[in-house]
Structures are given as C-alpha cells and as structure tokens.
Amino acid sequence: MNIEELNRRYGAPGRIVFKEGHAGFPNVVIANKYGTAEITLLGGNVVSYRPTGHSEVIFRPAKRDYNRGESFHGGVPVCWPQFGNRFSKALPQHGFARVMVFDVRGSSYSEEETEIRLGLKSNDETRALWPHDFNLEYTVSVSMKLNLKLTTKNTGAEPFEFSCGFHPYFLLRERDAAEIRGLDGLTAFDAAAGGETVFIGALKVDRALDHVVTMNPAPRHEYAILDPGLKRAIAMASTGNDRTVVWNCGDHKPADFAPEDWRRYVCVEPVSDWPGGRELKPGESHSLVAAIQSNLE
Image: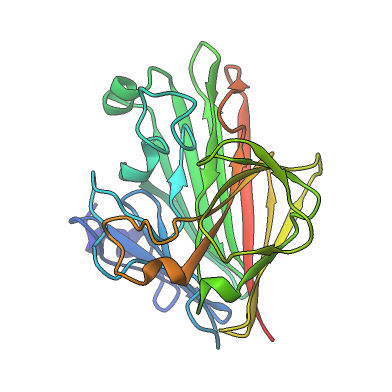
C-alpha cells in the first residue's frame, strides 16, 4: 500500500500518520498526550521517541540515511532470528528482520495509548535465508512509556531454534559521565576480548563496551541509564530475555558515525537466548517485551 492508502486504512489524524520514510518505504508516526514515536516499515526500526516535554531519547547517526542492505547504527533495530552472528554464520549479523519490509497489520488508539501493529511472515525470500515457517508480529505503542513487543510463532511442521533482541541506542549528552544501574552482581561475558567479569555497583560507561550479561531468573528485569548531562534517567523493563547486552563502540566508530557520535550513545539490549538456541515447536510462540520511560531529574 502507498502512503495515502495506509493513512486511509490505518491512520488517525494527529495520532497515527504515515509519511515518506527511508529507501522508498513509509514511516509511521504514532502520538498522543504522552509523546511521539516514529517507526520505519523497513526493518521496524523505532528511529525516534520523544516524550512530551522531554528531549529525544533515541540516538541516530548524523551521517547516513536508513537504507535496505546497508549498515545502520541507531534507533531500536529488531534483531531476529538471531542476535549477533554466533548462532548461525549463514545468517546476516543480527538476522534479517531489520532489512525486511514489515506489513501493517493494525492500529488503534485511546485516550491513554496509541499503537501500531506490524508483522513479517515466511515467504520465498526468507526461506532462502532461513528454511523455516514463522509468523513475526511487532507491536509498538506510546503510553506513559514506549512499549515494544516482538512475538515469534512457529507456523511450520518442524521445530526451529532462534534468538532475538531489541538493540536500542539511547541518546546521551556525554558517554563518559553516564552510568547504568540494575546489573550489579551479574556475570558478563566480554564479547570483544573474551573472558568473564562480574559487575559491581553501577556500571560506568566510560570506555568501549561489548558485554553480554547473564540475567538472574526473574519474570521482569529492570535497568536505569543515568545521564547527568541531560539531567535524566532512562528506565527500561524487559521480559522474555535471559541476557542483556551493553555496547558502546568507543572511538573505533562505524562508517555511518560522525567523528564524535560514539560519545553520544549507549546500547542496553534485552536479548533472548544468546548466542542462540531457544526451540519453538510447531504452534508455539515466544514474546520479547520492553518498556522504556524517560524521567527528568
């Protein structure tokens, strides 16, 4: 559907608006009294979240647009059906959902929440990359928080294994002044250097980080990113993940970063079953859920 058709079928003036997006595919903006979020249909990437009265929460690189098949660091990429590349070297880094075009499956709004529902399902293109039948549904909503829910369902006749994750880039005023709380006492694997460490107290984001943290068994995990430069705390709660990845590239920046972009973000990423291996039997499903809230000091 083109933008006019999407707005006619799923839009609502002032609440849900489709507009020209990236690489020829639409974006959708959802809004209400609590804030706005912008999501790309290409990859289902949340490229902006701005609570009412607050500054932008999500980091995007200044140098490059968001194009299919190119590296893009920023927003909240959807990593599926693998996180990273340790599960399957045959699949792209972080899987293929982030470069696929999501269908719009529904939208809704009320006084308290505005929601868009997106989806992917197996087809000839996905089977050439990964020979399994699936239905992937991604719901993004704005209430007092930004709410993300990614549900994987096995629609085939055989079990499959997968991993998934959200890869949010949180905007910071200055990386070296920020810290992350909620990981105290947890064991982390250094994915860059190898070896394990145990985080003690608040984690200072004053160096390059690529750590996969093993979460204690719990129905809900909670984190906070404290940013004194912007005088705010970003709170995140997640379910459906048994790992959390903390990443900042340091000054070995990706090609799409401006020279100082690496100082302006940290990623705190809920991840299911890294490096891979959650099994779904036919008809079974799994949901990864995250809620993000910005609080000013």
